[in-house]
Length: 343
Image (cartoon, rainbow, N blue to C red; front, side, top):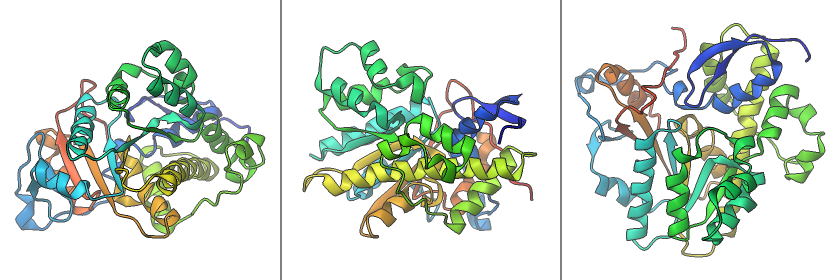
């Protein structure tokens, strides 16, 4: 457990930027292993008649057919869901704008959605609630109470429009993630040893069963190996367990809210990195299991579009990465770097 392992350091959005030998960095890999950088890891192509299709920015594509649909038709389907999963590239302003458009459209239909955010941990929920309820609360105090730096970090301004929207429209906000300290603990010690920590009991995770499903494991481990080659089997296992822990924790948050929400309350709009919704396996499938299979869910995968990414978009559609794929302009940080599984 104590030896050093050479692993890539990651920035938000998944860019590999340098190498480090600090074992504690494993939790970072687990935190970002399910972001948009992992969307193109399984090889599958569309039929030849569809492969000639060209794409454009702000186009919305149906996952099953690969064909464009308009926003009105998208919304008609999303509005009937109990949970709408939006998968983003981190800190991408166009993705924030897409989420805000969906939230506003739901309000226009007299629905009152709850907004779930990966960027906040459970230990920040009280701070989030305080900020939503107190119009005069200063943002700096809010970020302190919400433990922003400990759980996410980076520029809060990237995600402020979502919180501001919820605040101005009196919408509930769910802090989806387990505290980062728990994710770090699982990444460092493994799940079984981490369970013995008193913090697991405090956050009601000691008795949680982490579902080890073959399809999820196959995708996750293949993506981890493709993106971070050369690690020990022990390191891969801990990274995998930390990813499962995060997804199970976020699913718990959503499921608990669904179980206690009042009749007629609108859907949960979950806003996370795209990897947490891919193939419905990471979070959506776990929420469905917790709700005994009685749930209507939709997944919407947001991804930067460049003309040179035509084949990659076709691959995502051919893999049925989500119910819908929404192509957006490239972010200010540039297109995300993606790594592929070896053939």
